[in-house]
Image 1 (cartoon, rainbow, N blue to C red):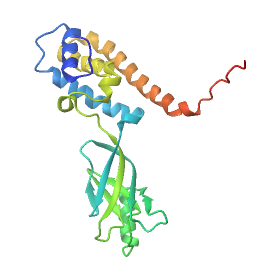
Image 2: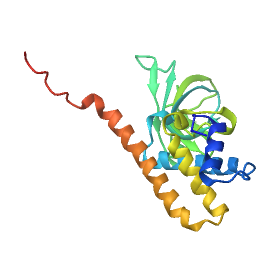
Image 3: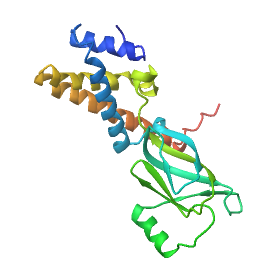
Image 4: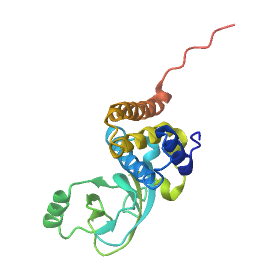
Length: 214
């Protein structure tokens, strides 16, 4: 069955490429493990633009839970801040820096100025008991195919999912000879995705050749 950009189609393609019709119970595991590895590698080597997500925040406490698919913060902007534009982009800090600010500037009021990622929460400073609206841009984990049925990666780069799942299947099948082959193909696809994204980001800066005069 050809890759058609869906979870069902990917499972069928994995079975076809492995020439095994008896792996339906474990193929979802191969895909889920490949998905986790792809998310990590694209974050470390890129990240690539389709991984960027946006969420609204209601900052009504010092600690606010991150979105479920959160892999890293990019920017946080708060509104209603005491700035001329009414908007303020927060500066990222370490948890230790936030603790130092709390210790040495305990009376600071106004909208938050700093944030840190602490486990599965965002920590804000200062926070004085009020509520501030904000917007978070962040790096997202791949939407799980098992739940979504499809996502941007399998639509644009189905070979990444296929080679990733086949790589995960090789140890299960004790097919050591295929680990290197599937691994090389998988790494090539991921490198291509990152390289293509960098070209697309810079395409606006690429000078177009002059049009010939008539």
